[in-house]
Image (tube, rainbow over all chains, first blue to last red; front, side, top):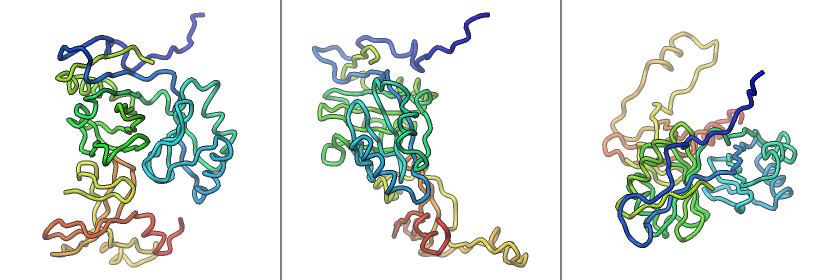
Length: 203
Length: 92
């Protein structure tokens, strides 16, 4: 018998090669990285269960589920608003199965679906990250309108994405459907080229 | 044209899909065929305020009822379709 175990394969394998591209200079204007080690689970409140669901999340992890487009939590576990009464739970290096952990605490209050294999998450940071993203996004990313913790579900280069800002570097993360990973990457690398773009090892 | 999503804020129309008239009401199952004909086919085309269903598919995936002036394309109000259905007494 051959071994039929499935091996995880990045949607960007062979597409996003580490190295410097575009304009030369001391420091890259934009740094692009594929996020790995993530578990992503979508959470939608069952009918009329928003309040008990929020209480259960608070009791289990001390996190208040955001009711506006915000991300609440930390690098280990964060909840990203993705629509009315809907969130993405995003965990990094979570020990065990995130979906099972959520299900154990939230039971019948919310519908849970593992999304980890279906999304790609890109981290985009650097002094010109905002300029590069603005080339393909219609929303206002200026600090007066979009700050760390803010989330938007919108289009980037005609591709549906969820974007959230992590810090004032600025650092952004974009989650998109896996099948769009190649197009999204091609766009962000091309949009960043004039500022100098450093593609770093996934992490 | 920009529509102010009550959840996401103002977004361009490229993020939305238009469905149609938000004023029609589905008849009861035993309603006469004339009522069903009107529900399926007959639409007003007002020169002025109209209520339409829009879907924020590239954003929060909410159905919205948008009140729009058909002459100027001014957006007069935007409300979640769910809230309006609940206000009409439809079960959640």
